[in-house]
Length: 255
Length: 255
DNA sequence: GTTGACCCTCACGCAGCGTCAGCCCTTTTG
DNA sequence: CAAAAGGGCTGACGCTGCGTGAGGGTCAAC
Image (cartoon, rainbow over all chains, first blue to last red; front, side, top):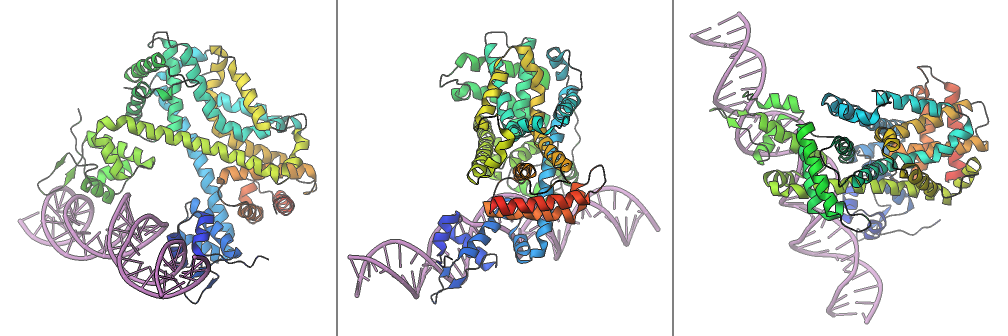
């Protein structure tokens, strides 16, 4: 039973929030010190630290302070709040999936997909659906062992894949850096690169703006060699190649 | 050349921002109407709509309005802003990877990993590194065709995998719903379930709080049958099973 | 007793809007 | 043709979640 009380600044240092914030939380009744000295000094105990953790957790989830107070003061609301957080996450994932669908649709209608098709010949048009089915088959065989082998990989994979993909596309393009920037193979890879970059950026903004931004990135590659350096070696001719290819891609396929 | 001008409320409806916001942006010089009627009415044209899109794009990326104005008014700053956006995304991905590492580390030190190991026997301890290597080998053979087959899958996969994983774990647990909630196999799957849920929620908050939240989720499953319903059929005994298993897991492994 | 390092309470300021109020303009309706 | 309805305009104040002082007490050490 640690009985030690802690001052504002100490709590501030421990928790990472400012003293001012603690003052405010006190004022709002969100986090009151467990005791005060005669001089008015605030002292916090174990329970207060726990409560602060809770406050910060919900704050991170985007809850307004007033709501956090309600939730923490009325424990019967606990279920509600779990629900909200959970559904929020679900919604985010759904919209992410939607934007990917939109991107694909966008690429198709803009005629870029036809460009890509020569790479994908042998694979049916509805790549997305194919992917879904393959995944379903792959993961459908739910013998415990087999599935479990993949299990721990997946959440890592989900993020890692994004980085890997970007690296892969970069690698392929690097190998082609002495080719003509306008030839179909290069351009189809650039289209893929574009999609990946959109993935990194998020997908807000109109098509036009994305195009501008993408073209700008090509200039950036030339201006700042760090972006495309490999093993610490800058690759000026690769940068120039990318700039040409991206520019051509924007002109031809995105306008 | 569409010459049609548009009023505030119309632009508001199209773009989804409030009229007040448009007024504010005008005042700040962020988005001025292309013309005004004698009565002072604001009229916006094509260019203004495009500019608004840009503003909203950078706003979504978290740029303050003042900075957005600087960026858009001074085209020479374009490179800087691309840089910022790009690095921001990179940083987010990095921290995501970190939190996953932390989670794994956390599970290990808490002794849960030892629980899981019986499922992973045959696979070395450093699952993460193994995964990295496997991926490198798999994608290292960079003959264009082979790699390209996976390419379009990846960005979908990254998000889909998270959902798939959660569904898979749920499915496995469902098949075990008549078993004892405390037996090792069930508990190791629950541990996985816990990790996935953390993934959905994000990973803020202390270990204690996450534990509380997780236990609470178990209650939620029982309280609201929609969470665990399959094909529209609610599964009360499954919910009860999950509640037992999760509760036991929290008591045994997280306290 | 004095010097710092703390602590306190106002109180103002900031972004990014929401939300009136009070008034003018334009379009529709009777 | 006039009146009502529906926008639009410009202030101006409010809100959240703090940062950043000012002005002043307190506490431990020297």
